[in-house]
Image 1 (cartoon, rainbow, N blue to C red):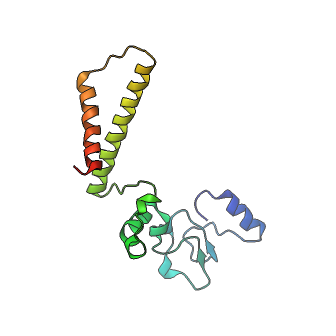
Image 2: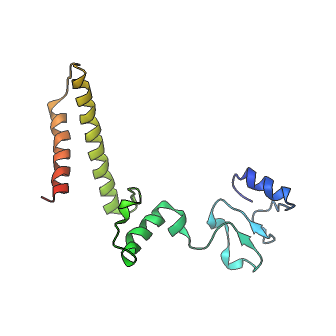
Length: 150
């Protein structure tokens, strides 16, 4: 067993399992690991089990699931995956990185303008650099035009 799994270790030992502390040993019935890279699938015997499955990243990583939904949903339904899967980005892809940066800028601009509005509604005196305000408004105007399709 590798990784920090005290409850799993305890329950297996309670059930009579014996732990082979040699992580690289080929002698085991169950190999419980933190990462699937620790499992040599091609060397497993028919009776040996692991807590991982070969090539399962489409189900076990957010990026894998993201790509699975983006690339395969169209084969099964007309539903847009973004209606039920949280906004996500594969930052190893240039287009996703740009989308992430654009979304980040938009959200930060919204937050700043909401804070300014809140302060002004409390009748507090506001000092803001006009250039900063211009940038905030420009970012949000661009977003509104993109949403309107113009």
